[in-house]
Length: 303
Ligand code: NAP
Image 1: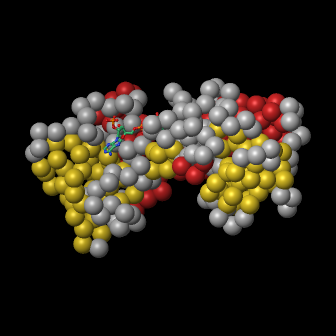
Image 2: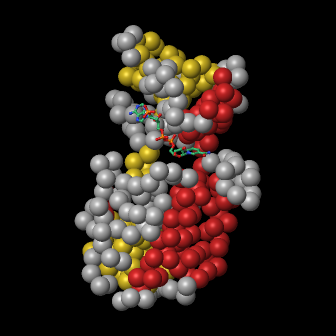
Image 3: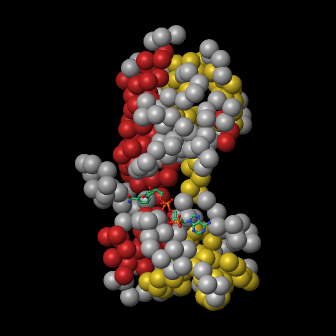
């Protein structure tokens, strides 16, 4: 494989893959580096209803269709984790297993699951604690589960799990949700969904597997709830830490940039959920990919 590319893109989610397609359409050589598997966050979503043209498509089918388009475009793809970027006229992207060079770099690394931070959480992953209802929900058929969070992910997870589990406790630290009202209404109509509001999960009890959770409400009252599964859906953390020497981060760790996806470093761009912006959706991830690649191509024409 050539080591010097016009554009090196880090992250093969919707933003990064869209950027690859746009850069290839401008006849630039492209390397797409992905640490895990293509698709990013959307790969685990069962139905996508808010992306134009194909309502109901699964996240897997959606991501696979883009990935096939990327492959057909002639972009090179490597599975490796980018750990640093060294700036210069030629930028070096250091990975766990090597080093690649790009005249421009687009960081489209997305975000990772935020943890609850309760003792024992890490040890119980795969033994009752999960961050992906659609991946692990089927293991809890006819059982009791809890979902923590107040955003669309938690609401949609609770809805999904209510078709599988005996009881779904939806635990949120506030009175109201930040997710869509329509989904909240839908959940209220489910007989097996129990709302546990103004409350936090404060302890996990396990014997090999999760057995119960302790929930403490905002007045300090403590309740023990027996559950086999705990689905944590409390948001995500942008994956920018490895690149903080070349991009500015806001206090929450998102990469600061305008709608043109430019960063403080000429030739380095950000796209998708790791960028500071109002709306993080598939459609805005794709839009970022297009904008970042277009700006990268403009940049390449100036050097
Ligand atoms: P989110 O909207 O950031 O919500 C995270 C939730 O977790 C918030 O309710 C927050 O509480 C709570 N939280 C954060 N830290 C916590 C902690 N330590 N303990 C307990 N609760 C905690 O995250 P998200 O639901 O993953 O959604 C991310 C983005 O994707 C959003 O823009 C969402 O709309 C979008 N999304 C869209 C769809 C769709 O359109 N179909 C589906 C899924 C997600 P507070 O409310 O108190 O801050």
